Image (cartoon, rainbow over all chains, first blue to last red; front, side, top):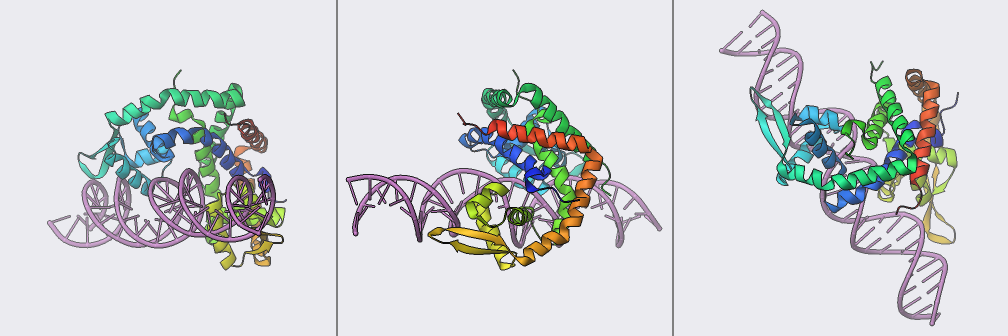
Amino acid sequence: MLPPSTRRSLPMALLRAREVIMAHFRPMLARHDITEQQWRVLRMLAEAGPLEATELANQASILPPSLTRIIKAMEERKFITRSRVKDDGRRARLAISPAGLALIEELAPERVAIYDAIEKRFGVEQHEKLLDMLDGLIQSQNGELP
Amino acid sequence: MLPPSTRRSLPMALLRAREVIMAHFRPMLARHDITEQQWRVLRMLAEAGPLEATELANQASILPPSLTRIIKAMEERKFITRSRVKDDGRRARLAISPAGLALIEELAPERVAIYDAIEKRFGVEQHEKLLDMLDGLIQSQNGELP
DNA sequence: AAGATGTAATTCACACGTTAACTAAGAACG
DNA sequence: CGTTCTTAGTTAACGTGTGAATTACATCTT
């Protein structure tokens, strides 16, 4: 049994797929001097409300060291606020600021347009099916790691 | 029309999918002190034969600046060799060394085992179908970028 | 209450991703 | 020929990914 060729490997396919998709979003993010990860953090806080750092890191798929840096940068730019959690001096509570919300809303139409363009090329049903399969893959691998 | 929630966005799904898959490979790579990208370069050269830098970068989905660093590191470790292309002093011809090939072969059984584990959890047909859909996605986005 | 253990977040070190600027070599054109 | 333009690769600057070590605070144990 041979190992899969690089042209048919799941890690490579996922990587390339993510590249072609992100290529659509990068110009928008660059225009506002926001990194992809900062954008994830902003959206997550906008959708889920205030979160603690660990929870935010998990949901945005960002590692703790990266999140520390991102929070620092976005706090300075006044896009998010940070406060201590009562009764536990270790935890930090992070929330999006009005300025952060304003950015999200400003970009909303463009986001929709980009998603429409992607779906138009790939097909709405294909898009939905792919999301389902990716969820399935993620769930399938999330059990015990023997 | 609302933008997609973060829980149903293609970039996030692709990112998380890649994470759960790479989690299987990381221990193996760490044991041999090889990064994921170095591993991609090695495999590519092993499968495709000697390549020029630009071609290698494209096929391994690595940006030129990263490839420069990777080549430097792997040349020092004697896993790859570099030579000038005759009649064009700009191009570099990169090839895997015997030591590099030996590493590939040493890891081959473990690679197969990891892929088997992934397929066992996700399902062989699902795996194949997902690869097809990812290819389709990549092809669909690869036209003109308006 | 004091020490051991656990947890949240940060820091450190190093590699890669990304964009822009740069160098060097070839090709095109006058 | 020499000038200009293009191409291959590198360098620079900054942010993120990753694993290990560290700090600060909570909790558990006795």
